[in-house]
Length: 467
Image (cartoon, rainbow, N blue to C red; front, side, top):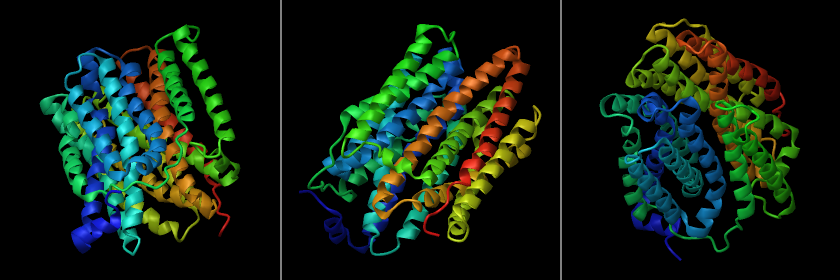
C-alpha cells in the first residue's frame, strides 16, 4: 500500500505541509536551475568542443524538448509508481547524467545527457503542483502556491548569475554539478516526506502516441538544426522534416481514435483555447528564447564574462517574480485579453529596446531593457493560466492545465531553435564577420519584438465564456 498523505501528516504533525512544500521547492528549483544556467556556459562549451551555434543550441533545445515530452508522462508515472518512487527515479537519473557530463569527451555526449536531464525534469516538476493541491486542501493553498511560484521564478534568475560566476572560475563543467546538492537533499528528504501510495487504477499509457510525439518533436528540431548547416536539398535536411511530418500525422490520428489520448486534442475545439495556445507558444519563445539570446549576445558581441552576463539577468528575474504576483492580483479584476495584450506589448518593447541599443552600451541600460521584458512575462504567466482555463468546463480543467503547459514548453524548444536558425542565416547574409554578428543579434531581437506584437491579435481571442 505505502504511505499516503494522511499517514504522513499524522506521523510528522501539523508542520508536515510546510516541510513538504520546502522539499518540493528545492526539487523544482534544481530542475529549473539546470534548464536555464546552461545558456551562460554555451560560449565556453563551443570553444572547448570547437562547435558552432547550430550544434550548441541542442544543449538548450534538447533539454526543453525532452522536458516537454516528459510532462505527458508525469501523471501516469505518479499513479503507476507513486510520487516517492517517481521523484526518486527522476532525481537519481538526473544526478547520474550530471556526473557523466563531467566526463564527456564529445559534444554529442553532452547533448545526449542534457536530453536525459530534460526528461527527468519533465517527469518530476508536475508532481509538485499535484501534491500542493492535495496537502493544502484544508486551507492555505493560495499562499503555498505563491511561495512555490516565487521559488521557481527565482531559480531562472539565480541560475545564470551563480552559473556564470562558476563558469568564470571553474569552467563549463560547473553548470552540471551546481544543482547536485539540491538534488541530493530532495532525494534524501523525499524518502521520508513524499507519499509512496499508488493509485488503485493507473491511467493507461499510450506508448505508441508518446513515441510518435517524441519522434515528431526531435525530427522537426533536427530538420531546423541541419538546415542551418547544409543545403535544403541534402537528405540530412529534408529527411528529418519528412519523418517529423509523418510522425505528427500518426500522433494526431492515434489521439483521435483512443479513449484516453496522451494529449486531448478535443480541447482545441474551443476558439478561445486555440487563441490561448498561440499566446503560450509565444510566451515560451520569449521566456526561453530571451534567456538564450541575451547571455549569448552579451558574451559574443559585448565581451561580457559569463558571470557578468548572468548577473544582468538577476534583477530582471526578481522583477518578474514581483510582476507575477501583480499579474495574479490583476487577473481577478481585469480580463485575460487585456492583461495578455499588455504583457505581450511590454515584452515587445523590451526586445525592441535591446535591438535598438548600440554595441558597448552600459550595463545599466541593458539591464533596464531586460527588466522591462521580465515585467511583461510576469504579467503574462498568471493571465495565461486563468484565461486559458476559464474557457473550459470543470471536467476539462486538469487536461487543459497540462495541455497549455505542454504548448508553452514546446514554444520554448522551437523558439530557441528558430532563433538560432534566424541568427545564423542573418550572420551569413550580412557577411559573416564581427559586424555581421552584431547585426544578426539586432535583427533577432527585432524578430522577437514583431512576433510578440503580432500575437496581440491572438490574445484578444482569449475571452472567458463565464464572465
